[in-house]
Image (cartoon, rainbow, N blue to C red; front, side, top):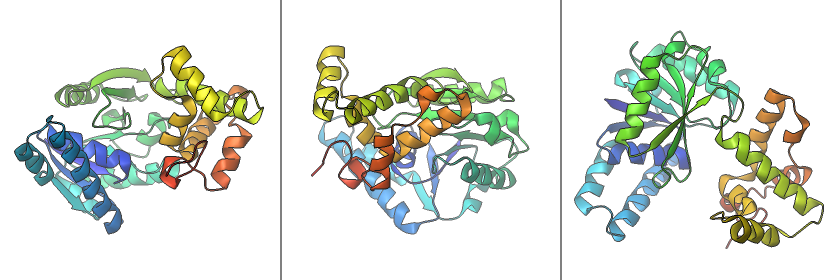
Amino acid sequence: MRIGVVGSGTMGAGIAQVFAQAGYDVAMQDVSPAALDAARRRIEQSLGKFVEKGMLAAADRDAALGRVAMTPALEAFSGVDFVVEAIVEDVDAKRRLFARLDEILPKSAILSSNTSSISITVLASATKRPEQVLGMHFMNPVPLMKLVELIRGQATGDAALAAARDLCSRLGKTAVEAADYPGFIANRILMPMINEAAFAVMEGVGTPEAIDTVMKLGMNHPMGPLTLADFIGLDVCVAILDVLHEGLGDPKYRACPLMRRLVAAGHLGRKTGRGFHTYG
C-alpha cells in the first residue's frame, strides 16, 4: 500500500514519519518547496532523536527517510492507495482539495482527513466516493502519541473504516471511533477546558503559571491547559472553538476574548515564541 500525505506542517511531517517507520512508501505533497524542505529536516531531526535514545537503529532511520518522497504536484498521487490530508483547518480549502484528489486518485483509494473538528460528512460530499472518506485524527506529536480518532461520516463504509483501523494497528497506534459531531471526542472535551482556563486568566482568577500548576499538581495532567494551548497554537484553538460554537450552537463554546486578542496580536504560542507563556 502506498500512502499520500497532503500538507507538510508539523502534523503532516509526523504522519509521514510514522508511516515510513512502519515500512510504507509515502508521497508528501505541499505547494511550497520550502515547506517540503522544512518537513524533511523535521523528520530527520525526529528520527535522529529516536536513534540518540537507542529506540531506533541508524539503518532503520535511513531506510525510513528513503521511503518519503517529496512532491509539489498532487498528480504524483495517481498511484496512491490511502491519503491523509493535513492542511489548514479550513472547510473550504479541504473541500477543494478533496474534490481535486477525487479526480486524481485511483477509484479504490481511500481519503482521510486529519481534521480535529470539521465534519467528515461535509468533506466527503465534495467527492464522488463518500463511502471511502473518513476522519483519521492523529495527536501531536504524532511519533509519540498513541491515539488516533477515527471518524465515520454519514456515508463512510465499513471497509474504509476497517482499512484505517488496520493501518493504525500497523503504526502501533490505538484507534478510537468517534461520531461525526463538531470536535469529535478529543476536542469536544479538551477545548472547553482550555477556553475556561483562558477566561480564568482574563478575569484575574489566576496567572497562567498558577492555573497550569493547579492542573498539573492537582489533577495530575502532564502539562497545564495554557501550556497545551500554546503548544497546539492559539489560532488553532480559536478555529476549533469557532467550529464547536457554530456547529453545536451553544454559547459555552464561545472563544475567550483574551485568546482572540492574543491571536490578533500574533501571539500564537510556541510557534511565535509567545502566547499565554513566553518561549526563548
